[in-house]
Image (tube, rainbow, N blue to C red):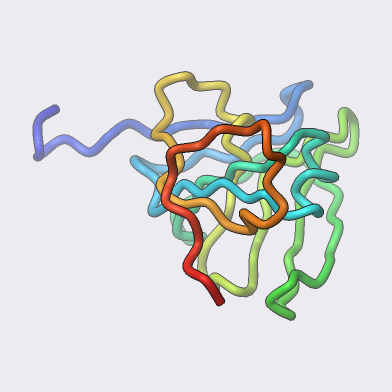
Length: 137
C-alpha cells in the first residue's frame, strides 16, 4: 500500500444495521479480553475490541446504553442497538479519548488480529491463542 494513501475507513454495525460506527484507517490497538463480563456481553469465550480515537469516529443510529464499573474501577459505557441488541461500541474511561468497537461488528475477515490479550486468568483452557499475554499485576 502507498504510504501517502491512508487506509480506508471501516464501518461496524449491529445485526439489523440500525446502529453503526465508521472508523478511519487502522485501529490504534486490537485487544482480546477474557474477562467474565466480556464473556457475558458477547455470549462467547472472549471479546475482541478495536480501539480508535474518539474524535475520529462517526456514529449513526439510535443506541441504548449500559454503564458498569470495570475491574480498574473506571466506568465503561456500552452502546447497543435497541432493536437487535448487538453491542457495537463502548467508551472505556480507563482509556480516555478512545472508543472501543466490537471487532465482530466489522464483519471483516481482513481486520488486523489482536496484538494483546487481557484477563488471561479467565481464559477457557480450550482457547488456543498465540498473542502476548497481559503483564502480571
